[in-house]
Image (cartoon, rainbow, N blue to C red; front, side, top):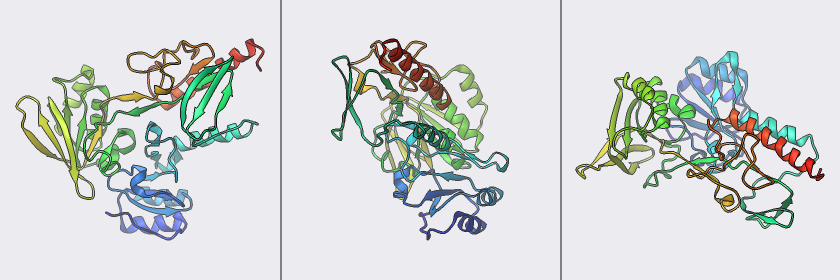
Length: 351
């Protein structure tokens, strides 16, 4: 359905009445939100503006089978950061809580308790060694100087780079099964990729009741055997290797995925309500590639104390060689990097 426009009524009033008539997925946008298509909305969701999210409204939606997703007016991060994608919400009445958004908000609130300058929105262009410290140059022309630097730029999903990918982002094209798999229950979905992340995504979708077709560019499958075995237990799974995704087509939403058989050269179209792209992640490390050591995957090489190859430069989170790209891991690594940076400055009588 097309997004609906509503006056800025209170969500408790809007959601309660709305889900009575529309017992399906529901997306909530706060006042002042940008256009829905810029927010990577999950497939099949309706949108409206609302002031706040009340327990009563959530329970009403939950009881009618709706799944609510709360999106910020300006998504955290940008298109180059995984956290820019929809922030999932647990609607179980007994454990009603926000994830990610609350975590980031709490971090920002904690920082605000201290006399620390904060600059949000400026893109860092480069980090250079100058004199006895470092200078960070931004696109806005505002530069920062410091005796130490912490790199926490994260990773971004590797795109397929095919026609229709950007056009159908949030309209069938997805990158996060944890966030969006429940919205594809009973639907036909393509998963592009053949590694662990692709099979993990396929399992999430299959458990949600979707019919899944996996498309892999290379011969065979690169995922661990145990993941392939688990996925193989589902009758709604179809695997197609040696296939190249050429184009994503549709009208208002994704409808077909056009692929090429790399063995005989023939092309065909797969009917699909959605496609999850799992062809790897790209480290956001270009701006420090000449500053610190990177591995073959472009990750910043760090030791157990988050130290990089450059004295005074520390790194944390998904951009580093630390395994398990999870928010809770990144948060812990961020704390370690901050402690290590402070120790570095303290030892040199800089604090």
